[in-house]
Amino acid sequence: MRPVAIVGAGKTPFGAFADKDLRALAVEAGKKALTDGRAVPEAIEAFYLGNFAGPEFTGQNHLAPYISTALGMTGIPSTRFEAACASSGAAFFQAFMGVASGIYDTVMVVGVEKMTCQPTARVTEILSEAGDCATEVKAGSTFPSLFAMIARRHMHDFGTTREHLSAVAVKNHANGALNPDAQMRKVITLEQAMNARPIAEPLNLYDCSLISDGAAAVVLCAADRARDYSDKPVKVLGVAQASDWVALDQKPDITTFAAVRGAAERAYRMAGVGAKQIEFAELHDCFTIAEIIAMEDLGFVERGGGGSFSAEGGTRRDGPMPVNASGGLKSKGHPVGATGVAQICDVVQQLRCEAGERQLARHSLGLAQNLGGSGATCVVTILGRE
Amino acid sequence: MRSGVVYTETVVHLAPERFAADVPYQVAIVRLDDGERVTARVEGERVSIDDRVVEAEIRGGITYFRRE
Image 1 (cartoon, rainbow over the protein chains, first blue to last red):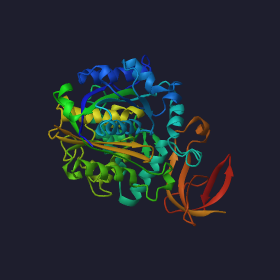
Image 2 (cartoon, helix red, strand yellow):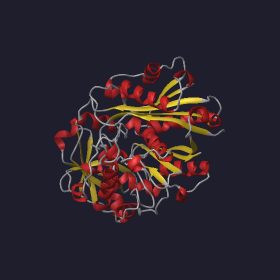
Image 3 (cartoon, helix red, strand yellow):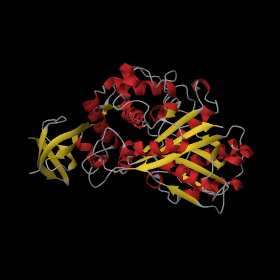
Image 4 (tube, rainbow over the protein chains, first blue to last red):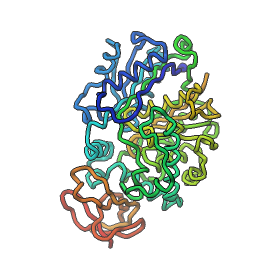
């Protein structure tokens, strides 16, 4: 296996864009990544698309060649990867292997989702198909309700509180307010976050991520060629994917995700680093409780300690372990198929010291954690400066 | 009738269209006495973690438990 670098990164803003269809979003992000990497479309040897439910949201299928040809790439392998909210993390993992193995020198990964073309009730229904439709979904579970049940049990077992959950929302909104590409650039107070209308108890509106349109893209190449494309290449030090039961009720303990622990362990081993060396992270805060549990499963804090660590400010930009300096899925937005690559773009931005007002003091080693469903897929990526 | 203990629960306020008429409704993961875990609806009085529940009925393809 040979070293791999990220030489180009690009994102669309996240939000509700009535005038941009799925392909327009994907092409916009892809072109930005090519420009950023000083790459021409002809240099790309394979195209990897992360997308969760384009056919259901938009009616269009066969999306990978539909997008790669519009980017000016013709004749190359173009494939869509689906792993719920971890779709583009999974596409990135496959793209990494394509370059690391020596099959390709230069590839592109795009993640995209177009969601706001459907009403909220239909979006909720499409998202719920990432759960077990024969059991939990049939009984009336939605994604907020699955994470609500996780939160209830975490509160019961570890004393996590309503205030701990809201501290995550307040922090991510404060970060997102400084991000020009974020969907909801709005600072919220702890009181607002704690008293919002209930969605699935104990989770309320401010515990839930957003319904978004958006796309993100990266160009990967063999590390020994990285300087041909970029003056600031970023090294992919470790990347791993793991899986678990789709149905929440089949997991013996729902306060921890085996797929996150498994992917983290392998990614740390590949990178030759431990949790304590990671300087900052973009974590999959689809719901506030998910960020708290990710902190624990990645080894940043002890089991059960994620809530109090967040409430004490440990994850703020000036804290010992900054998490979601981008605003996270909570404030930046969560176009589900775009999220995995968008997190990687946000880590790249910090590593290159290009995050403006959100720039972190320590920015040489960052981690991205992308979760699918209620923990059935996880991709962990560790990136570092050259 | 199957019975068991509530492992976790939630009350759903925002549901897909097919369940919209039911909100707010309670969903729980029940740890049955034989060790199996199932996701089901709860009817009647609200239940909490560690409460004992018993299967009440199957209606519209959905299994309902109630407080024992």
